Length: 303
Image (cartoon, rainbow, N blue to C red):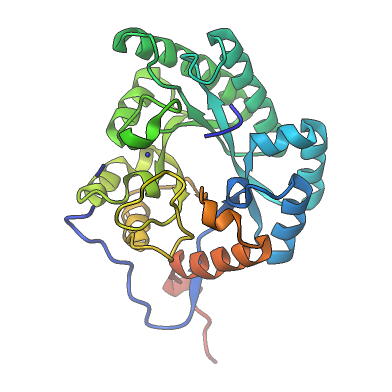
């Protein structure tokens, strides 16, 4: 698949206060979906110009330029790759038959391995004509097979849940718990889940859920939101909306999250902004959002 979801916090978890200016910034990437209309080559140049060291690849842009050229550009750019989005559609909702979707999944693995990515995002597909039991068995078998191959490349697979009203053809997983249960059903250690802040960040229980699922989350898809988005394209640059993103990240960090943070802004408004302006806005906001206190052992010593 070349394209691509209700829990808000009862127990607020704030970032630790900073007693000095010394800070570390967690690594993050910006996904090519955030700059939807720009070509692959322009993305590479703009990421480097903006000083953003990591990128999340969107397979639609890879397809437009051709995989070989895309891989060569990534390798020569020095950019790290956090994730490749998307594979899946095993139920036929994306237009693939099951075996075609599985083959496409292998293609996504080969691409991810070639660029040194960490994670391939799996959007399983809607239930379609299948019963719940049949659909689950079908998806679990496909993910398990791909996970076995992914293990040989040192890759993880991350199942994508989405809020029910936005899930559409993308996924039958409409909660983080649902995705976690399916990941467990595969019996593979390299299968985890995606936490999309836009999809689930408005729930009053999300912080508690993140504390429980932190070690199973392989990828955080980071974007902001207003209180009542009308469509899945109403995402905002982190820091420009109402979500307590710092609380989410603190809950994850404090409970064993070791995955990647990928800024992924599906937004008609953002897509119409100049790419240089968008990347600068993301970097300004996210560098502050992900700043954490420097451990005492790493503080400079005055003589």
